[in-house]
Figure 1 (spheres, rainbow, N blue to C red):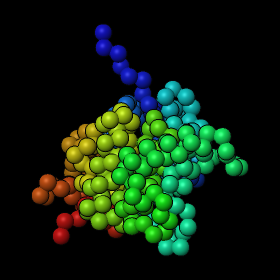
Figure 2 (figure 1 turned 120 degrees about the horizontal axis):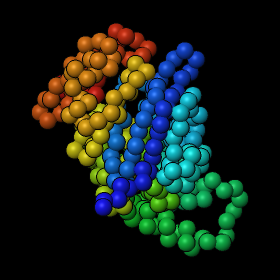
Figure 3 (figure 1 turned 90 degrees about the vertical axis):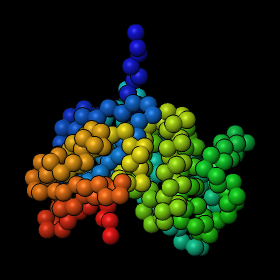
Length: 273
């Protein structure tokens, strides 16, 4: 008899509202080891808020979210988090390896002397996994955008998380660095079975490794295989307004989806010139 793996992440009837505004309602989600879930939707649809809920930073209005069968707790070291790409100031003095080390003990105040060798070994291994050995001792303010994001990925992975959350990690990166960052994240989930929740405005860089798409819009959602969700009829029904989905040169183009703040402003997953 085949044993079904215990879900790494499970949401049941999860809802998030701010006053009269509903971001998403009655969300049911099961994420198993090794899955790559891509989260799409217009600006303000609740993509980043979903990650905050999983991180224990945003209480749900109703419903539950569990990690490996346990209620979500703020600061859970079993969750790795890669934030949006925001460049460090050129004068930021902290070294790359010191930033990664915060993923091991940054949640504990004070200076730690015990276990320093073990921490160094873990940091070195995390940097090696993302190809960051050469800039480990350089101030992060002197690193390129791609190098800085590698350091952030190493920081997210150094605690050997059971779940990896990525919030728009490709913003401001060129295509070359986008590919490298996506490959690093995908390698982690393939080699270690770490499921990934990847929030993005552009599905195309991660389309090949995406197992399922969660599309948030108009206070509701749809979830399924990319070909099941990224369709004109599905998104038209979800938004309640005509939305066009096309494949152009192997890329997905979504046009016509309004943002919550401006119904006349078109949203797109990718625009092809």
